[in-house]
Image 1 (cartoon, rainbow, N blue to C red):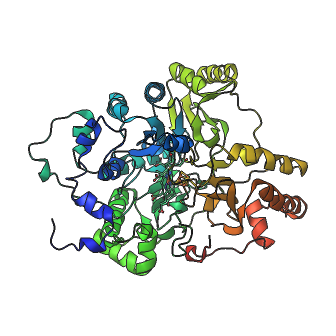
Image 2 (cartoon, protein in one colour):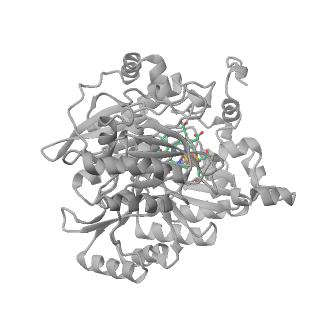
Image 3 (cartoon, rainbow, N blue to C red):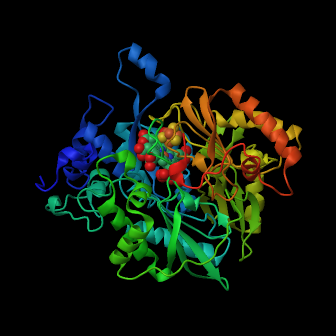
Length: 566
Ligand code: SRM
Ligand code: SF4
């Protein structure tokens, strides 16, 4: 035990991390325990660093309690997919694993990763080993470490995109924990002689105070919602070459109801680095947060709060000390939109890519809409790539003209040919929420599609069916679907009740603001109907919905995250 640490002042997780022998804990014993489908408490926390969350089916909660049964435990497994890029073979493997060990669906997440749900304890190891067979892993997909590194989702579009995808992969590899615990526990690799000598040169023995998130984007597309990241890199392109990156820090979405000291915050620009410096800058920002982040209260430990506590200038000065050089002046940039541009596009090399809308990111076969089967068949027939986007969608990238024809045929056969999707639905995101998320107060993924249908019909009455409007819903204020950047945002308060936020903008550079609290569906529709009518009548040429509601003062613009009210 380290005598210099006053454990009483720190959050419980600090001690769990420190005593875990670099993320081993008693995971081996927990996995072998045949009496329960759960892990010991400390191991539930440590398993996150290995990419797994213990969950219980919330639909069955009451009935199992009544029958005096333990909760229906199973695990969520999150796969690390830097830049979202997988091969067709890897897609097929994930598809097979989801059928064999999970709930027969794949979830494409808001951070370009896969999630599996419903994996029972006795299948965890087999699942990880099956992923490993296709060179995929779940290391650091969750936990107090750097998470999946996001980037613009279509490397097939130009060489620049391929470059940022490669950079995302290199940053992700560089910031992986060094502990060999993952390989020992899940892949049965031999214990190293004295694992207590494991070292974590970057993370130390208590890892980061909290999760840490990085994304890269290429303007004018803000498709990885760069301002919501702890650390963002905005590529600066001159003469069709990336000359370096503006560095932005301190974004984050998570808030807690009843804790006004928690708030969503947009990242701010602190300078410019060259392409050669990007990994060093990523590492040093992470280290400044490691050494300065709040380890007492996990609600206040993200980088955004560290920066607001230190002040941005003091943070920059500290970063420059760690770097041993100063960042250069930032360079001008502009974003035109966030979200994904759906449909077929021809790349610079004559190859084709299809950006396919995946509602709620859920890949499944349902009611004749056989998306899962279609994508399986497509993966069997193409040589390109499958690229998960940060908006829960999928790009089938880099295919020939013949493969394109084949894909269209397959999608048609399976009832999935992208027909006309409203501009609202195309720009919708819903977090998982019920029935798996233990933190959800209300539905999101299972409910938003039907709410969109109702709002769509109001839009249609006003000739706005095609108007692109960003709409996002989460089942609680943690913000997994980045609702505070939406033009129309919903955050679950309790079963069937949502806070309504308005006034984010279409390019993801402005927070929205609370419009009305704790609304039922009827109240939501009653509130939105006159605003939509007013928008149809009174908007100026090309004015986006989020900008209109600010101009017409339905809500007041939020300039600083700390002014946000929830
Ligand atoms: Fe998240 C916790 C799902 C992206 C902020 N998130 C969770 C957990 C693991 C619930 C838990 O701790 O028990 C959810 C699992 C639900 C389930 O059943 O699958 C969960 N988060 C998700 C995903 C799957 C949402 C989705 O539908 O796509 C996303 C997975 C991303 C990935 O692949 O890594 C996901 N989560 C996000 C994002 C968006 C992003 O990263 O761009 C955010 C907001 C950005 C940010 O971090 O500020 C986000 N998740 C949170 C938070 C609040 C963190 C905070 O700073 O307060 C929590 C709760 C926590 O950490 O205590 C959380
Ligand atoms: Fe769960 Fe809340 Fe995240 Fe939705 S926003 S997945 S309800 S933690």
